[in-house]
Image 1 (spheres, rainbow, N blue to C red):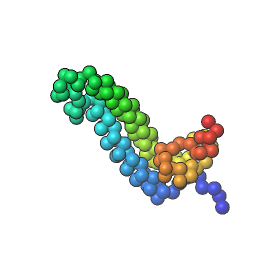
Image 2: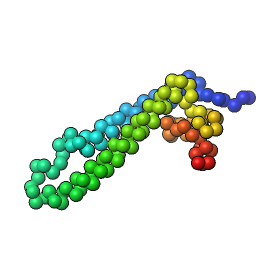
Image 3: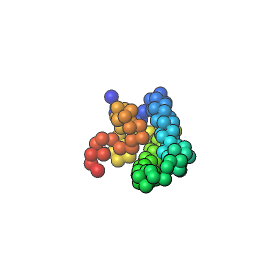
Image 4: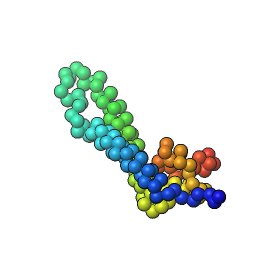
Length: 124
């Protein structure tokens, strides 16, 4: 029996559903982190007593930094998921970009935006 070189249209639709679900959650997470950074939720130290400003300013800065990092990670994850959707549309989804072999379904279920098989990833 010949080795499978691409996933079937049904399998690709299954992966697409998983990716769309993850994309929706990632966009919600990104929006939440973006709101934290821009104070769109108005949950800051502006309405507290001036005595607490000194203590809270340091914590607020650290919280903003962390939210900014998380927003960047979410944005990168969104871009990777969108790229995976493009690969589904053009029929190259699930094919390792290093080896040209099919990435195992289990790996794609866990990391749907993967472009490398475990074999190729370990070589890097």
